Image (cartoon, rainbow, N blue to C red; front, side):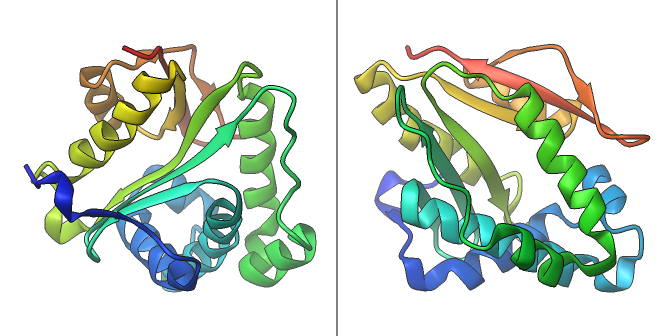
Length: 196
């Protein structure tokens, strides 16, 4: 397990690097293969899409990182506060995702349709570089932010992309909700954590 001293808040200038880390970590996932069926452009397409979202969270939320090995991307959903979408989102999504834009839009629609409305922090991404997985970095990032949420009495929400990931989150206090599916695609497992 890494020490919490190694966790630091990411800066806006690191959006591209963080997007690349998330794309590298997420490339093998079923949802990534559904989003970009062709393996050749998959990582670059994912990184371009993730950059839009990471920049948005860096402006409105919180990103913790452990070196170049792991990152947790959190977006607060506060009562009475409606965040704007990323600037020029539709045009940027098309530029980033090209022929796969409809699939990324379907993912957005599925997430929006199942997202809870009560106040919480949304874990948009928890990414650990494949070379560093299994060393407790993801758990350290979760516990670091959970300590803040617990102190504030704030719940957390996420969408796990696999049962394996869901089991990790269950160990950290998350409870599964009914899964939802992408069109002719893989499931997501929404999960909610009450503050300790």
